[in-house]
Image 1 (cartoon, rainbow, N blue to C red):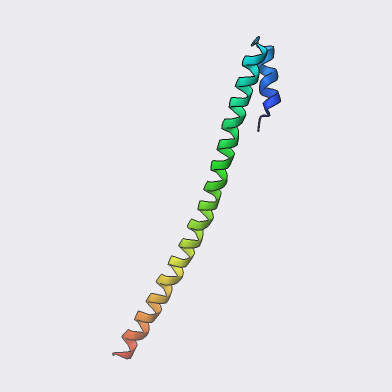
Image 2: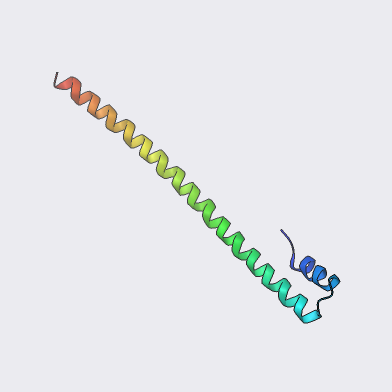
Length: 75
């Protein structure tokens, strides 16, 4: 992760004015924070999807088991 100070220093070395360098560094930091937030949300969603897959697999196995038992009861 790039810090705001590093971006500011890079713009200053490139010849940008004080105000322009500061605003650009703040804007990049805001985007970085936004992407970190989105990444956290995606990680949470992945956990929920894995849990739903586990529940679906268990449900399918139990359904097959019940249908198998019903088949043997009626034969």
